Image 1 (tube, rainbow, N blue to C red):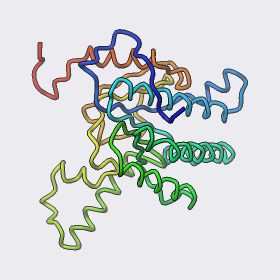
Image 2 (image 1 turned 90 degrees about the vertical axis):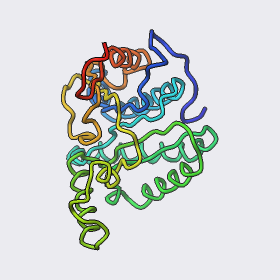
Image 3 (image 1 turned 60 degrees about the horizontal axis):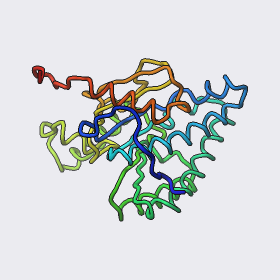
Length: 250
């Protein structure tokens, strides 16, 4: 079985009115495990499997991009054994991707400060980058060691360095030009941001990119956020009137 397979659509989703890019804060893995008397690592494994399922479903629906918040810059504060388990799970996932993504035409991209990762993990990510560059198709984006404020500061410093080098004048900067310095350069902004797990905050996630995203919150924990729950989010999105500061289409 490949990284992302094929599943049938469920619910009353209007396939003519789907977002092209969905972002998800994968929240609730640890609480899911604790409710079942399991170690938190079991919740992270279940969450990784749900990511595969939802990626499969997005591909089936012809949603172009799925971006998930996998590990924030603040998550290093968690117990070391939990962090180590997440990183082992990541390496396992990367090996699976390398074996299947070209065959299944699935692209993968990582967003965040990857410099702090160990050499083996960085090498595996470079390998997935090389494969992704050769193919077209559905793209999963994984935010790893990511923070929205840090991303904006990183972009500002990069632009300032280019100004100091004489490449640009400071007053030449536009919103479109600034986006080229973000980790997400080249990606469309998400139309829909989903947060399972019961919390109702953005938690330093895609602060620039989600300026006009529709937000969907649910108490369902991420390992239980299956295709039917995803349909509920899509149906809620399709009920919104996206005016972008203008008047209603009605």
